[in-house]
Length: 573
Image (tube, rainbow, N blue to C red):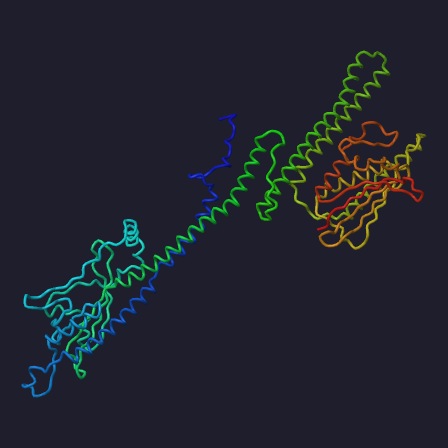
């Protein structure tokens, strides 16, 4: 919509929970790094593999001991020994059941003994007596701990304990009796090999557990009489991994609290000062007067302190610029008002004068005032555009020695033309023109007088200084321009001095002559010829180039003023 104001940016925006977005970002980055580290630690695949291998080795050692004991104590002579006429042995089912039961009592393994034909001879979890067979089954342990602990364990089982996955393990199923029910491990043991397998049990609403099985052949004089199969649950392995993971999670919880606290502390040392700086800048933008001050954090010695110092310096520079603009506007109004007053008075008077001579003089005054206004407005326009031009233009290498030599050549050509016109006037019986002062430029050999800057504006500076020296020099006087190198390295400067033989600068006015609209002209010069902006513009240009301009009186051997001396110092690259 036309005329509507642009939306004000929400520079003081907070997050959903009253926390700054910068704080949330710092917190998210720190917590994410910690979470990735903990997730990597929680993946205990290799640790689990080592536990499983250690458990299988221990189970295999037990199985070998059981097989050796059974091979010695549960063996009887074979029934076909009389028929074949050679000595043979076989496992005794009764002795095997007794020994398996006694051996299994000392361990927490499920032990089964198979005969040479693959039939199950004994099972440590099946008791045989007069009433019949009794099968022993382990019941799951009752839930331990309070409701919070059970909830934590349930969440662990659902989310954390799935790492690493066990879907690649073979599924274990109990087999029915009969020859076809011989487990694969027993079949390999019947062939004389030790067999070890890791199984996963069927899941019943919870995560499947591990089952470790080891089968070892029962031998008598290298003859395989059967096989013993030992199986053990992987609950102990799961408990060990669970314990390690809970220890990691406890350390993670402590580290998380420390990380969150340090994140908020770090955010407070960054976000809070930045917010204060933003609030102060917003008050400066929307407020009135100069009562608002940018907070000073320069004592921090970091980037925020540097930002605070830069903002304070920028604010001071803005106020100084605004003050300069106000003074400039007031000075412009004052300088323009004088010729306008004179012009209005002359215009009001010219209609009431009948004398042609006086009317002609008034018209000349009007023409001078109009010319003065035109010159004044042109100089004011150039001065107002100077800041923008100096801030936008890119500096280029400028040879100061060549520039001064060109200005001297221009002056000599202009002076020669003026002398020629004076000679022609003498031939026409007109009085000759005064002798123009000379300009001498002293440029040392060897070069090294190049400075970075804007050639057009630096030319304007030295044109103003030379023109100012010429205007104060007497007829036939001498304006000397000398250039030299000073300093070394990053502090090296190109120094230019412009001296004249004029009356010099009034005492105490060495700084005032660089102020806007200040005029101190030679006696006899027509009023309004100069606007008083030349030296002010020159100082502005030199300071924009990182240099310095000063003025002083040049004195003779007797201590009297022998002329003025202007010094310009520009930094070398």
